[in-house]
Figure 1 (tube, rainbow, N blue to C red):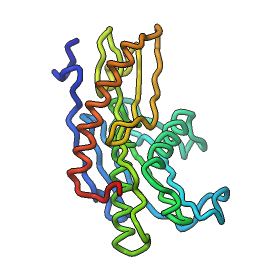
Figure 2: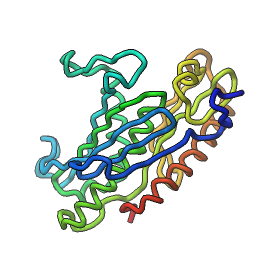
Figure 3: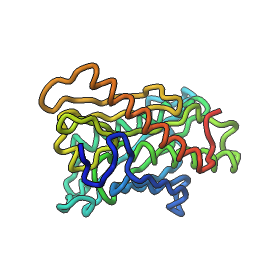
Length: 242
């Protein structure tokens, strides 16, 4: 299949990871996958949700939102509407689940790190970009807490990244942009660690069921993409898994 930007079927869009993007955040990252741009920030809260009080365990949570001009048509602010959409809730829960696997929560103590992911420009793959950039923001935050002696030891146990894949017009593709994603027969998001162990897979046939062979091909594409993303994360020289 010929892609509109000339990419190969198993080729990522141009990737950029910019840590330290937001001055007032404990950790931050400006992440770009092609024309999808997301600002991820990490802040510390010295208390945990009620269900974790007096357990000695910490928590990682996430919030996600698309800014009004992130899409071709203006997106209404959900704060104005007074409630979050089901899509927003589902995505931020995914981000939180993914990033919690990166950390030994007991080593955080009874505090939580909040990851905010704000999409400033959307062209497909905003949730996977948020997880990838969110990990960088989280790692930077942990690094700062260790330097300030707020943590006794490094709680990060694995490096996390995510990427989208799909089948469009019968062809398996890595890192779908919006035009591809909106026409996909199969849509998938893969979250993995840097050793390519699977954290979560979201995969749906939009029209017809898909074969195991198709699943295997998309998984192979995802592994290739995650390897490249993990290498880019590691090049930032942030705190990593113990």
